[in-house]
Length: 340
Image (cartoon, rainbow, N blue to C red):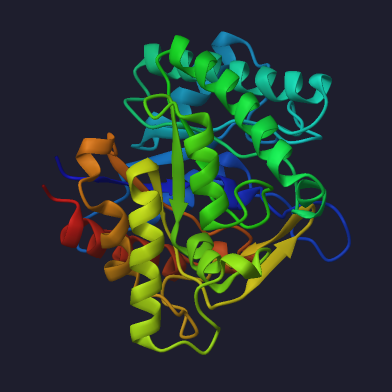
């Protein structure tokens, strides 16, 4: 099965806002139009991955409203793939390691995501993908106050969330990103997966930009494997170590570029900086790096890959060349590793 190529809709929302110095959100329809306009040698994007929150989606929208959104997306020529549950404080959810009230909100967000997934599935607009979560606990300071108990607390919440997802025929993928407590390093993420121990219902989401910052030790220097001035030999040795540990859990995969730095905008804490696919400061060989994560992808149920360009300035997102370069990078990954 050849991997399908998806674009993410959340770069139009994450880090955007009305505060001074912030770019405003980009509407769902505009993000769809920008994605639909991209084309490289006759190849276009096959689908989109989708963020289940305002202003793109009211997670409490009626069935008919959600079917209208599905029709909008399919009308642009796209399937819907992985969905992002609104698990964070200020959306529907709250911290997965918080009080019972907070974790209850987290589980409510997963239930809402499963409801929307069911509507999209039955409407014929969604044919695969996962529901993405994270710990919804920004930073690691609070986590580190009692790391042993906090990782168990997150795991308990994830386990209950995974049961909800399994009851709906869905799988959850926890996003490996240095800003999320319990998912802030490659060792912590692996330990959390093992603590939950529900591989059929909950796995890991790898992102090339974020997992590179794992290796550099951002937010967890003791788990860092390389310095910023590493050699190629040091990089690939560390990369193999990280991917071998996390790949068996990986059920959702984001293609991305990173320049070795972290970046934050708005309420989103500093995390792996996403760069344009052709950024001259990019440190990653995108095609080669992706291959480490995509070994045996079919056995893990991966049917598509997604580009993630969170927190690109709107000026960058509005350029056609940005999307054509992204699509070109995605095609190269698929042709090298995703044409089984």
